[in-house]
Image (cartoon, rainbow, N blue to C red):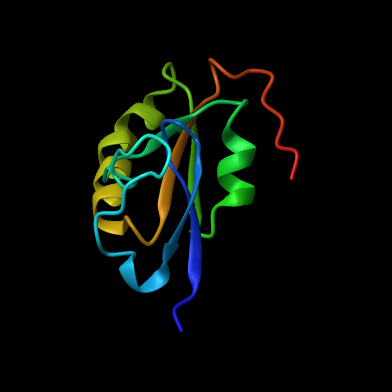
Length: 107
């Protein structure tokens, strides 16, 4: 029997269930019918970060970045390339700390 994985869609934030053996396929969101995996880092904010961390069964890699910090800007292309290589087995997330200065992780 195949295990079900929970995956949070990056745009409408719906929690989707999918068989683990279909993870490599192009799953679609049950709410908005868009593709579950885009091979790009998902930009989140303080309002939706916790849902992605607590409701998804995928391992999460988070980049807390600021647009004014040169090392963050120089790492961005490599992080985007990593998303292309690691999805759908990992979800790469970006949080702009300049726009989310009151960010608090509650898990």
